[in-house]
Length: 129
Image (cartoon, rainbow, N blue to C red):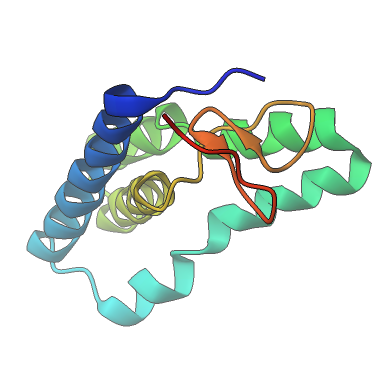
């Protein structure tokens, strides 16, 4: 398993922080309520249920839900349809991904849940150089 290290890993975590801050700010500027925000914030983590079918299926479902493409397309679709609710869901989703990146939870490799592009997570964490 290869993971980014050093300053590149730090930049990716800073990038996640920027996405988190921008998503929360845009959500708030659009008048989104905090109850809805916190209700839906952890919803993308249901994708971990894919691991019940094994590490390859789990990584595929987790990565599909934890990349920025789908929530950005959802938010853009909401803008196009004039639906503030759909935009809000896209922003909450991108906030979730940004938060995960800040915390060091990266996209998964098909080898094991703890093997991510930002390094290994869990009890046997590998030192990051």
